[in-house]
Structures are given as C-alpha cells and as structure tokens.
Length: 123
Image 1 (cartoon, rainbow, N blue to C red):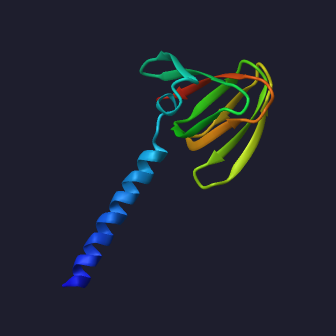
Image 2 (cartoon, helix red, strand yellow):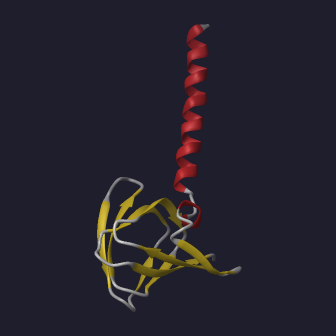
Image 3 (cartoon, rainbow, N blue to C red):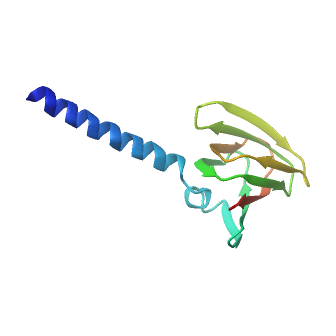
C-alpha cells in the first residue's frame, strides 16, 4: 500500500513539474520584462514589441512564435536557450533577422543601450 501511495505522489509531482516547466517556457517577454518591452502594435496577424535594454540588463526566459527582429541600434547580446546552450549575437543598426519559434533569455553584453523591434507572426 505504501508503494502505491509513493508511486501516486511521484506521478503527481512529475505532472506538476512538467506543467511548471511548460509554463516557464511559454512566458511572454512583455510579462517577464515589462520595463524593457512595449507592445506598439497587436492585431490578428502580428504583434510588434519595442525592446530597450541597457548594458548588463537581462530579459528572463520567454518564448516567441516565428519572429523578425529589426535592430534600431547596434548592440551585442547573449542568448541562452531552453536547453542551456548560449549564443552571442552582434547586430548592426538597420539589420533584420529571422528567427523560428523558440524559447530563450537574453542579456545586453555590449557597452551601449540596444533597441530592437520584435515582430511576432501570428499565422
């Protein structure tokens, strides 16, 4: 009987852990970093978010659908993905990049404030 109870508790714990991890991965960047992120357009097709980060500022783990990132200023960022891998990216002012849907955190590792527009596609 105790083994059945222990197995039941373990199963419930595993299910709760799975739900918790999924909800962390699904966080909206505007909710995790409201002082850095401002929605400037939201309709049935796209959501456009202005992101401003000072040197050293971090944006916690969040998820995006497929996106286009347009860099308003140059800057250097470090991305940490859900699997723990990291990547540094240098963007130039006026540069646009494509990104498939993903989950990551990022940090401004440059010496200047970065400003980008994140265009999330809804279709």
